Image 1 (cartoon, rainbow, N blue to C red):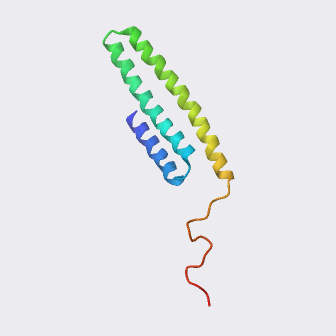
Image 2: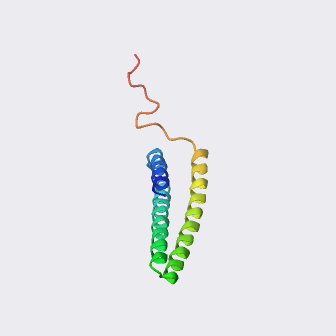
Image 3: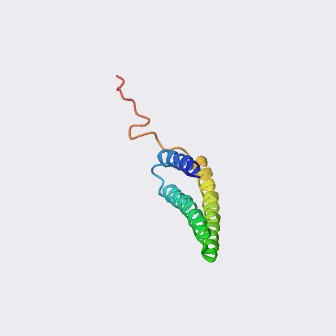
Length: 106
């Protein structure tokens, strides 16, 4: 599971760099990253509780993990929609001197 989380984090960081000025995108990515971590942690907690004979606690951790995975899917759906909206927007100028000649023409 760690490699899946690492690969997902790498892809999320690529999105962060690509759209650095978009606060909503940054918030979505932070929330998704948290859901990935929480889901992984809860799966471990469930496993450990089950191995120690705490069946009710294992069930509780499992249920919380499912809630986290569902909220992850919801956030992922919003991320897809947000990225589609960004693709439909015109691109901003590529820097402060966009459209200007570096060397003046005489």
